[in-house]
Image (tube, protein in one colour):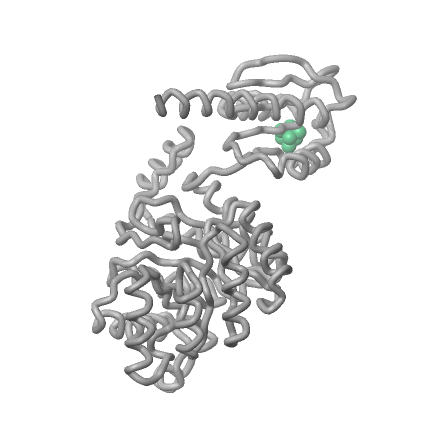
Length: 385
Ligand code: SF4
């Protein structure tokens, strides 16, 4: 990226708009969620319960939906799991992707039971009649397919050809599956090309993005634990998203999948590609702080997790950076002595002392959230008349 482009991005960021120009992809529908085109970048996660345990899986799907997941993937490794998937499907409303490897009968069964997207690689299904049967079932029911290429499970032939997983090997694998769908004139698909290595993943997506028009599902696979996986995913996905590449994302973490959804939103929020809930701005604190910034920030984040309204809240320990950040945030707090200064819409609003600071801030933020909701409801009501 050139320096003037970077400066331009910096200027846009100050205005809180994303300067990212997204790649124009063909839109597909995963249930009622559009993926690609000008649709918001969808956030996904995957259940890690035993699919045969319908109650546990329904509970986790609902928790993911509550955290903001637009789409949830569920593993369907057997025919029994396909039947369980049908029962899960009946009990949740968020679109479900069935993750299937090799077995076309499972794909046909979940298609009957109401799946919203099939994650199956056509090249792994085997005989041509089986491939045709799956594609026909998907076409008849308007079910899109996700081709999911993973560096850990590349075809033997490609492993031999390339010696080890490479970006080109990932793309070649994807193109083989895509060619099969092309041959059947089936275009409602999206593709993922995941590796646990950031450079390989980024290079593979960049390459494929220039070759096809279908939406891309981004992810750094097996990224690691909560902290290391978050960093790796943020860098890899961030580079691609900055390029305008990516229509749906999944952050893979060896952690509670609900965290994957939260990190996914945080990545999109950082790039102003999507907003959900509070975007906190907080200083790291130092001896100049006039209140306990770290404690206040973390308490507020935990207490306000249920808030979906998009809002910038700046929690800054002193006047060095406080007024500047408060001016561009929706709500701000600047540490001061003997009292801290609370800002609304960039303007000083009232003084708050350190006793009950977190309670006071939570109350004031919730009041503003409620006010905005009322305003939104009024707009919706007016537009409905
Ligand atoms: S804003 Fe103030 S308290 Fe926070 S890190 Fe900077 S100087 Fe320290």
